[in-house]
Image (spheres, rainbow, N blue to C red):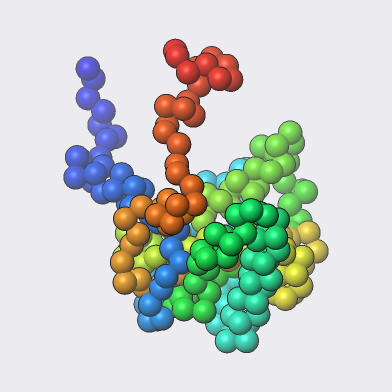
Length: 219
């Protein structure tokens, strides 16, 4: 076997896999401030994400006004109630879940898909949604870097995009993708919160890897 000179050391590789395994979608926060230098590092990590055609379609809006924070929390609560209605028989179970930490987290960000994306053709001619995939990559970078820094992060998607866009004065053609709650936590969940609360159980990887066509589980 040839030696891979590009490979990280065993301890470095273990750290990478550890931070991936221990990343959690956090909902419970301690309302302590986030060090500005740490926040800057996290946003820099997000900005290093891959993007289709190097278009870098992500924009991050930092929410520092108390009235805006409360307005975002109200939007999420409105959608939480609508989601519960849509879930019918699982509505009561859903309403018992904590779906956001907007009021408690030390930093609140909104990730936005930028406007004027139609001019970017490279990699998007047949798959225009790749700009959204690029924003998701930036969010994941931010998430993993936050876990490495000992900070929790939660991705909140319970909101009406048009209402949030109006609240934040977004330009036409842009779209809010995520409300990101970031901050200190008492502890990280030992497993995904939805698993701990009995809402869902993750599937095994072997069920999701196909060979040479859809549904073929054997190579």
